[in-house]
Image (cartoon, rainbow, N blue to C red):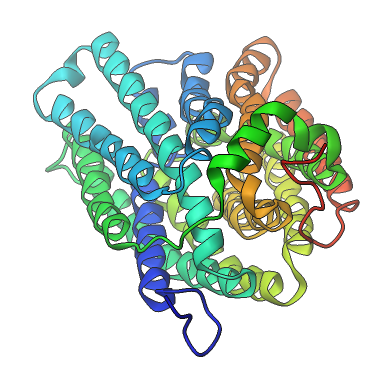
Length: 426
């Protein structure tokens, strides 16, 4: 098949549109079911246990990150990645199952509801692992680097604008006397499930750009060992140190909403403003960081994101010390920093990873990188233990310190250039 006149890969326009729709609606779905605000608030309805609330992020991240090196070994050995993308999309019915459980009265039985919720959350995360390894590899081959930054920037702007509507909707639903608990959360989970429907359609219409000789590459990869990028690629090591330290922001993330409602006495409906603030930040940073990534590359984007991330726990710390005052009403600023950080995560970290990885080893780089990030799955539960053993002051202080170290590590990242490492290295 001949390439288009502008030098773009085959099916570029079709794939650009499909990736855009997938990205936008997946973002909207996760705004309805935000692991940093809505899901901890939901679990809070059934328990006061900080470790259990922290388990939301642990399960979500753990079942998404930890299996990826195994999944990468499976996906990387196949020439076609799209079947894995479609298989992984089947787990998106999980939010529908949670909604049905609430609609049919399971919310009156806290232990059973929490069990169903965490099982469904794990199913959603582990199936999306299968989809995501294939998705990133297909994206890297279908959309060149500079156009990839444009795609992600546009998607984050549109998804962020949609997320603003989600924030308003959540506020209205939680404030409505017509939708008492648990029907209010049942409706929110139903809307999350609806938002995922276009992502499945978009995945189905993607046209895969053929990979290279993945069969022989897989044999060479097996002989050299799955830790090869970590052992032999300094850029990969520097990236992972920076990302793991910055990712320790998740120590405190699940507890911001609990802190705001329990300690600062804000109403439960404030969750909607938190979601809205995070989405506004996603819109703004999608524009600005998208331009930065397209013009300067992903490394500066990582530095900006990790620098802004430090401000989140610092502001929460100051607001906690100040008590129930003016600063408490500015608490959505914490979620602004989260919006910027997560925006930089895709435009920076994953773009950097896709660019330094050799073409025949990209699934392995992505899988190994995400599995290493699995260290962070313990962070929210650890944060819950720290909170119960000490105080919000200690939790927010430790979080800010670790994220600061991540920013320092990001300063050592060089430009994102393809590694000279090869799977057939002797």
